[in-house]
Length: 457
Image (tube, rainbow, N blue to C red):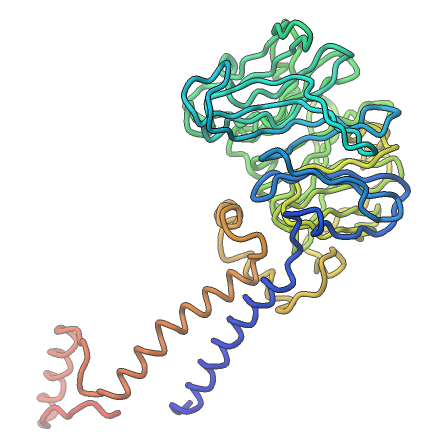
């Protein structure tokens, strides 16, 4: 390849990289304001979703796909559930505030709330709230309604599950993760050690909790502690779970015991069935687009409703593994469908349904429009561990996907290499040479009886 051809190739690469980045920015789905909420394909009931990062939002769609509700008053929104038989939802949310609170004397503080919102009237009501010292993990990501007055809360700040009476604000029961796991494991202690991000009250009275940084889902007998032979996963056993979110329990009456879980850092949805006293993986789903999913609910119709955070979409996976429904959304955390029960209530296990596992599909049917680079997404995804990709995506603009990062890398490489080549071509006799290489070359030339010659262009 001569210089002219190489210059054309470098220019084409630079134009391509700029085009991909510009395309991503221009076509990105944004949900930072009510006007940005996309229309959803029609579904049989109301769908509600939350976002928890750059945009703190909660939104809902009518069955016909038009917008029903939108709010962005809180900094972050997390788990959301319907109040049965109503048009009201109850959710966990966090505000970062720059004034002192009753239990936080050194701002900035975090105001954690369990709040209700009427999707029809727009009225909101705080059910329970607490001020905490603002730190990396000063958030409540999940809560479970026990009865009219009591809540279970995944208290990430103190690495514990608590049951509180919302009328008296007394903690009536607590399970402390630090009493069951060594602080040398997990994340940095005490800043974000367990990252306890989910809690569920099971029909038999046990409590299921997700310790993200320990890669485990645990089952707790109140007053007794962990049922160790029921624990799903183990720390750093990333073949089983890798920093998971929002596990849902499927009871024996629906084909379980089974757990369907968003296996976040493994970029997949998985289900494990309880068989002969152990957990066996019975279903797995992913495509080339999925990146850091954080919620997965089995619906009564056999579909699986997913919040794909860095894939920037909500989607519904059919029993055959195809995508039956999708909505582009910048940074979803949780998604619920009215009329299907809370989380996976009413959904059958994968083993009972005979679900088809699917991994590595194209993602072309996954919502959000066509991909400019097509199949390059799989290649880009393989360049770095998922935790690296997710860390970068978390702080980058929401429209920066794998293809845009690949384009930026390509553009930077061209920007470095091209000027170096031009300098080398312009000044062929000026440059850096390794002394050992030069001495060896001169010695070889003298052995042949010839004088060293200048480098050819």
